[in-house]
Length: 319
Image 1 (cartoon, helix red, strand yellow):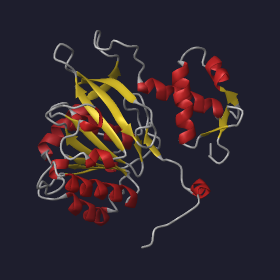
Image 2 (cartoon, rainbow, N blue to C red):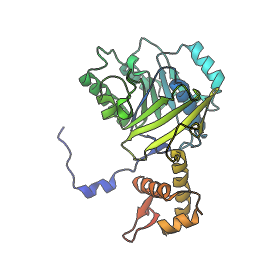
Image 3 (cartoon, helix red, strand yellow):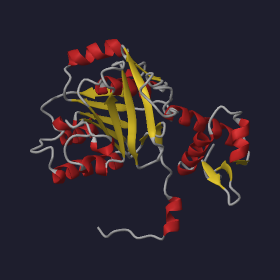
Image 4 (cartoon, rainbow, N blue to C red):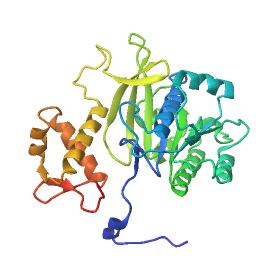
């Protein structure tokens, strides 16, 4: 097939980004999730999946659309373990939208082929692959060529099925920061759209709290950092433990709340300058939060910025 060439103005006809959860999960995107064993990645994901199918808040943020469908491929959990986990979390009300498969002998490509055979059961908006090391018959986790093939497969799957794919992976022994946290070939995080990191705090701090960061977000650059406390089967955003953060801290969830508030303002049909938005918010959010929120709204195709530096609802975007 010959490559498509087009003049830059033609991208105006392309669909806007399609968020699923906040600014951190999008339809058609691939997320690599890295964290050391035992930090509760799988329980976190089951809780997120439950929130997605029920249309309720997770970490204070509701899914962008109701009645989402989730397929969770869980190669490490028996049905008894999944039952134990769901007793802790609680079963979703819309349980028919949350489908699980856990056959350890089945590779990811086999699951992909089988999805069509259960089309009457589910058409997933989000697919979890947990963990990566059991998704493929890997010879060498550190082989970048093999990592690139896997990453391209996930990308092709996300586009073909018009869903988000979340791939659960463990961190390197060196526990490196940023996009180098994930173990093995760098091509996986290099080719991923979004990278979620789960970081354990030093031993002197509360070990029920971990740091959740997003060092890479190809869709929207919002420099995400929050602190999450696991309390039984629930996950709650909290302030960083006393003494852990030396510089001023402002939660990325708070930035997103600011974004939602500004969106509500624009839905009234107003055209506003940044200074007017700050005044209307009455000091509730910082200027940095407001500017980040406006940037995200423009990238999402929700807001437009005029030549005079004013913002209004994108006239092509349905309200």
